[in-house]
Image 1 (cartoon, rainbow, N blue to C red):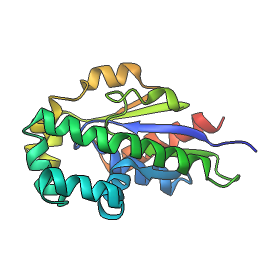
Image 2: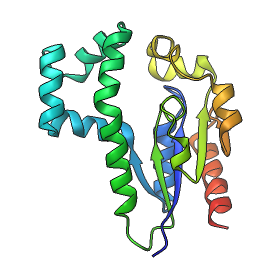
Image 3: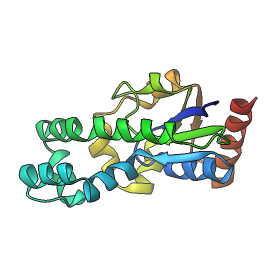
Length: 184
């Protein structure tokens, strides 16, 4: 049984990873968002919910974010709880894909920061100038980017990279080019 080509999609907040993931899906790749995995863990995993309630008094993601992005100790704790579970869910998803799936793309914002790149056959980095990212998602860009690997380093380490400062059609053409190269 052949396994699909496993691709990690990474980039900073507001760079357009989610749009790129949708473009991969439109072009026939199986896709998974690690952010969505986190959302499911918080809403469905009793152990995670209990730990969050005990630590933060809530499972509301916005309230938790307000705490963890101002406290490195709380953020480290949260990542120790979530990251192994996300990794396990991603691995299970990849292992469970149907035989006809040729490319599987997983959006992982903290790919390099968690040392996860070695688990994938290829890495796609999507970046955008800070002004564009701030326009897309507001000041959260500055608040959360300080703990991330710089875009230049992500681009240097990636197999494919794209500066997402154009149209959705431009992004879609980039994704088509990546898929063509992977499927050859």
